[in-house]
Image (tube, rainbow, N blue to C red; front, side, top):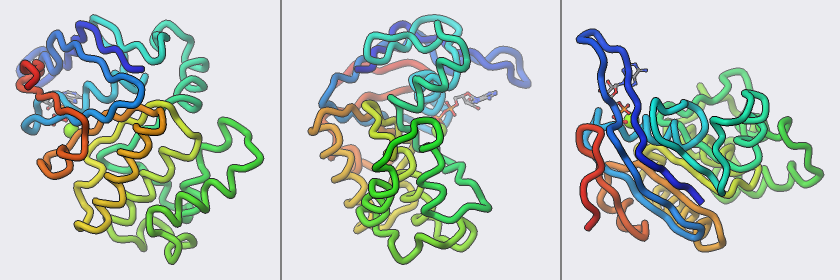
Length: 220
Ligand code: ADP
Ligand code: MG
């Protein structure tokens, strides 16, 4: 489902060019839930952005379901992302003036679908947000914002879900809801790549890959 091949990504930093991701290769198969761990600054978010069609690598490839999104036009790539990839950002990126339900429905414009309202309701219930559906992000706890971002990422039934610390701000109960959902999502034919600092969260995944200074460590 996701093939990362010899990925390099450089940034221009204050001390010159920084190699944030250095020759990283790994695969996430259909049905697989993979956790990614590594110290802060090790390149996890950069790998996720490249994998999600959001940031072109400097070298190597991120292939999703056999397709290289970076060979598409920007419009095609946006459409490809909307139909195939769910992305949960570390900083959520919720739309401040929209309610929870409208944030969850925000990606629906990209792909018109009759059942989208029902699906949004289902996700709201699933992630324990029913009492919050009409509230704005500023009226939510961080954990509620995180679950809203999760529901939004799943609205279009993506085949690949990329999640950056999706349980970082959740209490145990809500973390379990999210992790169980990710597990089921993978088991039902999706694929998940999840960045996490938590060993317990990683234990829900089928396997864990480790990044250090932009390089992938040998798998256990
Ligand atoms: P992680 O998610 O593991 O904390 P990141 O992928 O965010 O790591 O960052 C990897 C390295 O690249 C860090 O040293 C970070 O400071 C740097 N970096 C990330 N994004 C940018 C950017 N847009 N411009 C310059 N440097 C960046
Ligand atoms: Mg990060």
